Image (cartoon, rainbow, N blue to C red):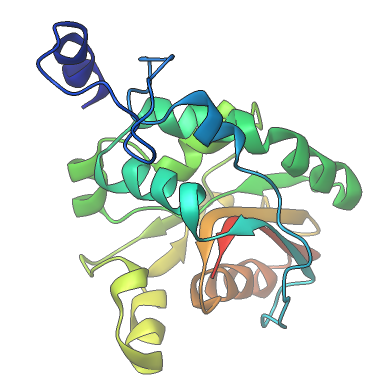
Length: 216
């Protein structure tokens, strides 16, 4: 998607303004947001933390609103991998601070179902981690073709979607005794990360922590 938009913008066929403020784009590699808008993405304190089952601790970078919300939306629904890299670079200091604080043995992220992966072409959380230069392993798989968790209606439907997550069989012995950090783009109810943490603890993980780019 990004590679297709870039030549069109250079030829003047597509408007070159920032989609958030209309300002001039000074970095066409991601082609959506100007530097001042991206610079406005900052950690939010104090975030209202609530207990999430099976998580030992978690950290949220910012609120799911304003520019941060639009950036995540474009990454996921405009399939912008370069913007995911850029967001990763922006949150890297905060993420690395938390990594140094908890000292995880393994860092991982939720999988996409096969339909979502084919339509997007990449796992957006993996791309964000790559932008932050954070090494990560995929410990999970997702079966079924349900809608994204964010579109689930009600507690029971969220629980049903969460059951589609599985541990990869080949890593079950690997996680025993490990402290694991699960990174995701967004936390709403905590159903997804709670399910992933439960799976890890059930096969002997020592602790599971979470980091989220945005929270509602």
